[in-house]
Image 1: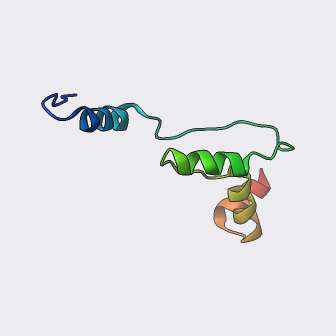
Image 2: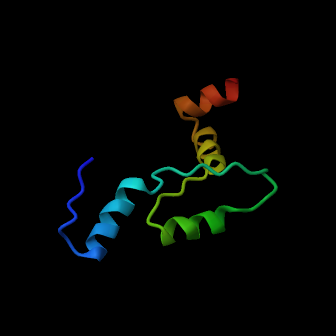
Length: 74
């Protein structure tokens, strides 16, 4: 990885941050804990994407998609 250090400190910090910040963050929690709002807020603050696995599974099962059918069969 090559980094041009002949730029402003702000630009350099941004480029380094882009290279090393988390792209995917997995949060493992008990189902009874409601963390959707907190995770969504963190994703917004740090320019990330938050996807609730529980909501995604529920969506596929309710819509009877091929993936949802496989989940139900398991």
